Amino acid sequence: MIAAGELLICANCRQGQVDIRVRLERPDIARFFVGMSGEQVVAAAPLIYTLCGRAQQAAAAAALAVAAGRPPPPIDDDALWREHLHACLWRLCLDWPMALARPLAEQEAARSAFAHWHRQTRTSPAVFARATKNILYALAANLPVEPSPIHALCNAQWEKAQKAWRALQKNAPYPLVARGKNGVGAGRTQTARGTLTHVLRLHAGRIGAYRVHTPTDRHFANAAPLTAQFNALCAIRRENADNASLRQILECATLALDPCVPHRLEWRESA
Image (cartoon, rainbow, N blue to C red):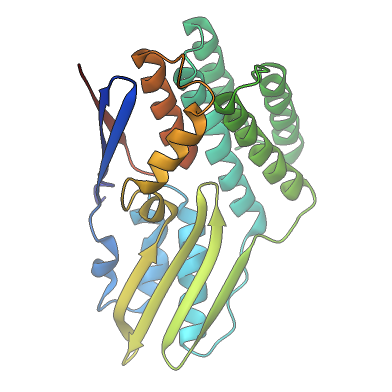
């Protein structure tokens, strides 16, 4: 397995003003696809990309098909919506309670609830449906009600999970589009983090070039999106926010942009 990389966020807080820098380090995994057959790439994509593996595979297969002049192959809508829902619930149960500094007992309860739900994903459809309804209901009951931009982001994450669940219940087609011709193809689909695109060029039946464009690449190519998210979150509270609150706001701003790699915050305070 290839390392996923790391997002480093450096923040310097001085007299209530926070200067944010980011450094996204990711291996160019797509370069390993060059020289492979298209079938090898489609088989390898969900093994190499540990998050949203099914979406990665669907985008790769669609790009390959149109590049070769074929219609995109059928996709497993149910599996893709389940993957989407899993990513949303992971954030809601494991990351947001910590970012919002919920009591430790509440954080542990959320982790346990997610673990229980995850076990039900391998059971019958009826059991899985009941488990999903239960966890969404429990999360809704514990959603923060404070009129805060931070809490609104957490609530929006719940709405995304609810939307994925409704789509799964309705057997809705998973969003996937493909464009291409003459050996060049692009497959675009959605993940819980945003739009994912695979672009490739075929040469003599092999991959001549390959690029993957992920939400994380867009959101953290530089500090501008994170800085904008941070400023929007603390605009109402800046006058009254102490340094600890500003740090928490930055953590929540990062979580709202939802990086798909481990992230680390280096927080410095200066007079």
